[in-house]
Amino acid sequence: MTAEQQEYLKYGGIAVGTGLLVYLIVKSSKDSGGGQQDPTGNDNTGGSGYYEAPFNAQSVAENLFSLMDGYGTKEAEIIAELTAVNQSQFAKVVQAFGQRPYYLFGSNDWFGTMHGLKYWLQEELGVTSDYYRTLKLKYPNYL
Ligand SMILES: [Ca+2]
Image 1 (cartoon, rainbow, N blue to C red):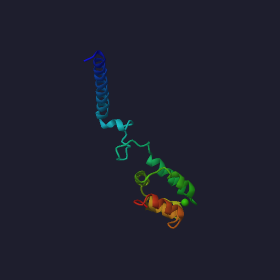
Image 2 (image 1 turned 90 degrees about the vertical axis):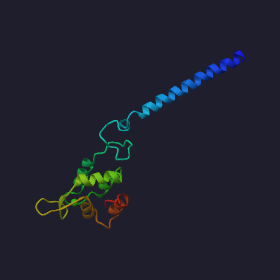
Image 3 (image 1 turned 30 degrees about the vertical axis):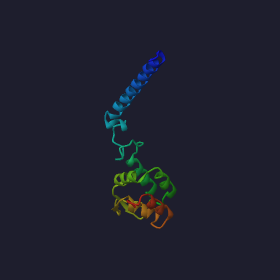
Image 4 (image 1 turned 90 degrees about the horizontal axis):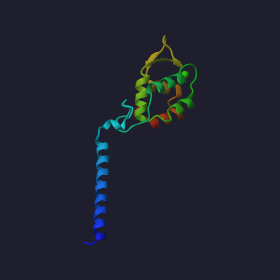
């Protein structure tokens, strides 16, 4: 074996050793607990196991309520409020909205009958309106 060949072997060995070390470090950091996928620790993974942007279903529900309550409806703002809301998030909005007393054009504690978000949207947007149809296509499981 020449001195040149010995050099190749030496540096080849270092390269392989370094590669193995890097592999082991990366592997161990990936193996150390699933909690790393959710740095906030507040379980907003949406069940997918992957981190999603923080989503406040209660806040969206209250915004929708204020856009529907009272005389008239702010259709375009309702659509805008739901632009970034996917179907699994919408399920949480429906839950957060719960049942609220509806009468004529909004909430009414005296004459209203309790209804969920689906009924509210149908009453406010109109079942046959493009607004409602757009949302129904987006959330077929809930509207
Ligand atoms: Ca209204």
